[in-house]
Every structure is written in C-alpha cells, then in structure tokens.
Length: 337
Image (cartoon, rainbow, N blue to C red; front, side, top):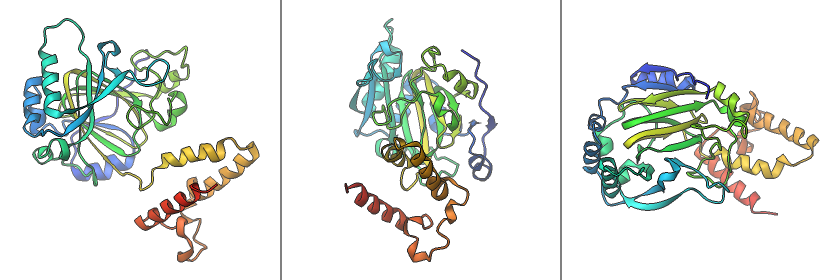
C-alpha cells in the first residue's frame, strides 16, 4: 500500500490558541501531550492499572458492547452479503467489561482473543466523577465526554457531523483521515443500515482491494495518518473521514463532540434522494439553482432580505424558534401525500 504522509502535529495548546487557531482552520491536527496531565493517562502503564483506575468511577449501569469472534481480527464490519454484521451486541456493566479485558490481557492462551468494544458511553452516566478528576482544558461547547473501551479493534472509515476532539487514555491508536471531498473515492456503504449511526467506507484500509475499489487509490493520495499514545489528542473537524485502529489489550479513549446542528443535514440529503435525484436532468438542474440560491451560494444567508422580518419564517436567521418552526413544517409536509 502507498505510504501515507503524517498528519500535522503540534505540542499541547491552551484554550485561547485552540479556539483562535485550531478550530477555525477546519483542518485536523494532532496535539501531542494535550491530556498527559490526566490521572487516567498516568495510570495507563498496564491493563490492570488502567482497569483499576476506571473501576473507581464505574457503576452498574450497562454499556452496549460490540463482540466479535477472533476470526474478524478486530474489524467490526458487515457480513459478506451485507445482511447484518460480523459481531453481536450485549449490555454489560463497565466493571464486568474491564474485568474481562484484563483477563484476556493476562491470559496465556495461544488462541486470538475475541474483539470487545464499548463506544460513546457518556462519562457522567457510566463513570460518574471521571470528568471532574480528568478535566479538559480546551473549549468544546456543550460537549459531553464519552468513553470508548476495548481491546485491539478496527473501526472502519467513517465521519462525524460534529467537530471531534479525541483523547487517548491508554493503549495506542492509529488515526487515518481523508478530506470530506474524497467521498466519491471511499465507496461508502449503506446509508440507512450502519454499524454505529454513520455510514462507513466499504474498503478495508488494512488491506485495500484496489481491483474492486480502484478509486480508493485516489483517496489514499489525499490521506494523512498518525499514531497516538496515552496523553495525546487529535482534533477532527466535522465531516472529515477517519479510520481508527486500536492496538493492545486494553484501549481507552475519551472524545468530545460539539457543534451539533439543530437539525441534522443528513436526513435532508436522504429526502433529496427521494425528491430530486431521479428527476429528469432539466428539472434537477432547475432545483440545483434553488439549492444554490437558498442553501449553498455565498448570498444564501441574504436570500430573504427583501422580505419583512415577520415573513421570513424558514428563511430567517438561525435560532431555536426557527428550528422548532421548521421541524413542525417538515412533519406537516412530509406527512401529506
């Protein structure tokens, strides 16, 4: 496989620098040692120590754990026929998950271990007090710290609608990122049946089949990668595709999503598939003009300036009231025939 160049890196930054330089650039960057002062990162020398530290905060509230047989080699994905997935899901309390991971880590059995992965567990619900003991010194407005716990796993290339700051607590993680404009070269899988909410690339980054997916070679030409150790963090802007491979018997990551849109753009795109994609070419071109005028064009925010404020309704400036009005309008119109 073609050598992938490294992601940009810099040392840990303060809150002002993060808000002034990192986020507005909308470019991914690795922040080495950003959370090295966390007690959780300091306890990451061995799986048993990591598990013991997390267990201080863990209650009995279960998390959803993805469980894959050793044969999947940690890559959670679809079955070959795309009728379901190559893993199962179980509700497991965090202490039980940690104990199992330690048991597997310390086992002398020669056989490969099953893949275990619990993702996006809100720290306040599953590890109450953890966030107070490990505060994030960066501005991520309204973000909820979420914990990801597992062993050696591979999460296929996917995206997040929100901005993302991911912090490695234990183990090592390799992140490989692709710009949003590479979507056509990533061979995206089903949009409505997904492993964890977001559509994912069908290409196995660890062993890409360029005969089956030839355009992926172009995506690789735009990829960047980095390996993160405990205490490191990575900023991933919204809609940047990222593939995540975790190494080691006990990996823990904490991430922060922020900047959630009041109404997700994704359902709007699905609606456009039904309403516009299959129209005759001339009609599609006409609707493209509408979308450019009201949504994508530089003057779109001012498309209703000629109307009095009370008549702008869906075209008004963003606000909670406008979002509620649009939701009601869409429910009413989508419910009709």
